[in-house]
Image 1 (spheres, one colour):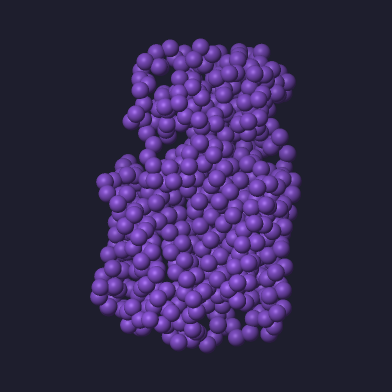
Image 2: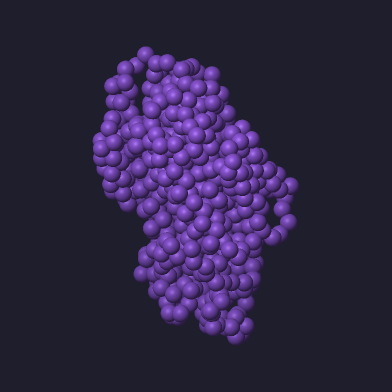
Length: 523
Length: 92
């Protein structure tokens, strides 16, 4: 129906719209239009593809309806505090789509409908490998964020359904594939890797003995199988031709094990790095699929996403003063810490909502520093209410200090504050916060710990040494709202809590802010 | 298109990506991620060809349909949720 050259032209226009759309993300004012521009690009690319000749539509329609319905419901119903989980699982779907498209192309080759050249063979292997690592890695990230994977406590019924259901389905797929080919030892390898993948997701500990060895081993095997598949597709039969697809499934299984192991030990404060990294992988997988089917729009769009993920990964690593290999392979913890928590916390002072209200009455400039605790207790609206109240009642200037790795994904705090209608010009990054910290009368830390720990500046041996922090200890008075003195993700005590100008308000974030609001209104 | 051409496009696109994304402020990093997530749903193009090309084997159409579902979730869900978030950034 439409000529191939028209199709290519429309794909080029779509690519330009994607780039334009991303450019719009440079400012909140232009971002909505940017997103719509990018969506328009996707729309015309899809429409021109649907108009291609020689298509039948029933499978396409089924896919569009099911996928569209799931996507719509998920996007409309997700609460803003659950955004990290949502982005994590969506990354995974991108990887899954790539690996299945590559599988479909491989089927055409094995049934003689198409001949694989070197480009297609290598790209298929990479799309499968990266796609599988992305999908299974993202599932683990999702499970960790939704707190049903790698945890020891009791789960809700729906969490159990997902957890055991997923493991069971993966194992069943492995058995099904192996039975329909029956070529030992490859079919055994498929069963082994798929069942192992299922079992690994059930593990209740974040780290277990032999994990590093297994990680290396699965990486090495994935490479070997990948090379074997390329050789197989170039015409030299490693396995009988009718079992080519089996080799692909072994690759998927081994990469699944790799993807799970790479993300399983990562938790808490390192999550933003991993989500950004998986975001990048999903783009790379799409670009590789572009090489499989020789399609430029896939390559361009995939590269844009890949580049975006790499940049975010980099920013997150810098904000924690850690290298990427250190996040992926290193462990963090209090093991070498020489600080004794009880000794440090001897001089902790506790305060009350009424006392805080009195302090706020005379404060001219207030800085609120939110962390993951604000997300957990859904305190963003209460935080905004207090800020508004102070501005109206005392004409106080209230600012928000947002650390890049506060929360569980890049920009997590910003989204929550935006949801609560906090204007973005009230938001300071850590550099701006620190250069203005001398003018701050009261700093309120809510649910943040490691990102305000002065040890990062003072103790070169600490696990967070050199990490850029927000120096709330240099404000005139600091109030820390926290449920207990328990350590943050880095597992080290925070001397900030015991400083002369610091007061602790032990409470849940949302309740604490509501109590302070009530006290300010009364005074 | 031949491999060299495709590789050229790949490399140039990565550079464009770096240039454009570097300018995105930290405030918008979450919408950037969900928005770029939607863009990576471009695999839907490959899925359409796999699911719909008449002369191809049935198995590859089924895989195509599966890919169609995944990619459509990404495209629809990704753009919608990004729009929802950005609306919140817009209002003052």
